[in-house]
Length: 232
Image 1: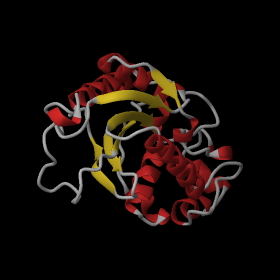
Image 2: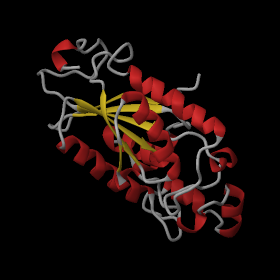
Image 3: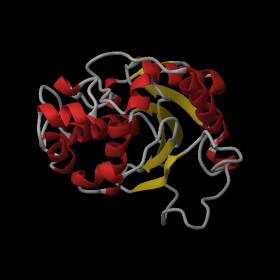
């Protein structure tokens, strides 16, 4: 679908005074895993876990939403033409569903991996608080505080922002799907909107949800939607 055939920018879209085209990035959070259910820390230091049966259904529903982009859903946007995924099993499985739905191969991109939670990997909040009293709260509210043996929120933001920059450099007037994780998607929204890093955790990014961001070469940015559920 070419830009000439797409619908005009709708009322309420970010204002532009020229015809410059952005790159559109559709960030899909992976479907449910066993650690999503228990709310344990599931980062990038291990490849697993895989999707649950419910997570595979969420992935399929997210793929259906992606397929509608540039058609009846946000018809002013280009139809998705590329799929990238974090290297984790859960994101590659979700991305495979998206790729099949829109007829694209999946490219693994380390920039969009989840935060490395270091020694917290696989642990729940009560156990973390017992072993590192107060540190988890500081990690969420002080963006330069790293998880023990892992990353800080600021680290994630730098990595994700660099990844989005490379997507922009590869060309505009296209839509790229990136299957990623809760903290990485929060960071992507945060750097897009210039939010302070200690506010990124305030964003709700549920399993299987879709977030759509647009970046222009001149630095203008737009959030089309953040954390839209796809399994309702």
